[in-house]
Length: 340
Image (cartoon, rainbow, N blue to C red; front, side, top):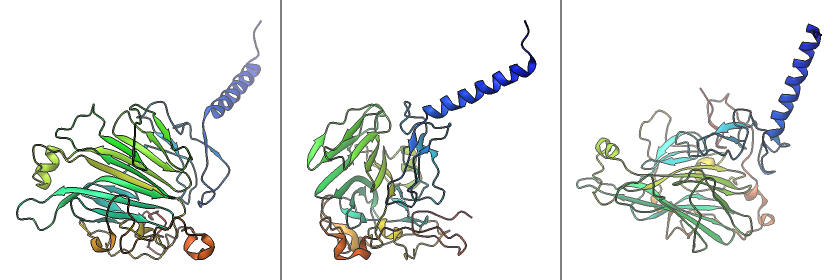
């Protein structure tokens, strides 16, 4: 007995509907914290990247940029994007919250505040060297100190003579104690009070540090290669490849008073002196942002005050929010750059 052609098409149509429903049910959902501009009901991840934590570390993950005017899930590599807002890579080259590229020299073996807000403070330790005849050090970010509440979290790239991809060069410390976060993807550590967690984003040398509803910090350890040394004339010694961090920050609800080498570029009224199109725009402030150590918030412009109550000065705690206006030719200061 033959099935009428019309019935066959109905069968195929129903099968496709059932299949699409099953596929939709298998994808993750994702949402933003209630202090972000993209606070909406959970949304389904795209079929191209259905999971927020894919089983393969090389696969793109489902991600929701909570500072974006689009507020839609997208596919993203969890490793730092050195060409995106909030990036701190190379020696070191920053991309501010306003989307403008600038460099900050700093000084080898000293510490500087990258971000200083009322309830979040992030320091960087610089390493480097000064070849003969040069007036300034070449510097790179070797470690981060993240302060929140009464806690201090430190992540660092360990010193190594020769770079070996099969060796993990990351160390983590929480309140002075070294954490034994196992190698391998995905290996996850969560603080007992759930205020910070670490997820390895590859088997070795890459991680995502998350302070829920506050910040995400993507890090990757890289060396100075022989080609880097040849091009930039660093004069790297034979006993140290200057392993350092590539970093990208995402923030939720920074206050308008946020400070720091990078943090000041997230102020809503910040005017960046580093003009677009300048190949090596350099921003100063060493004297203003120098701290005593990774765990100190004692720079001249630091505003970190974890015990301060919002009722003392509510304007200081109003998060940096607002819609992006690309009609004026400027950027909003919210970590989003207008595309030309």
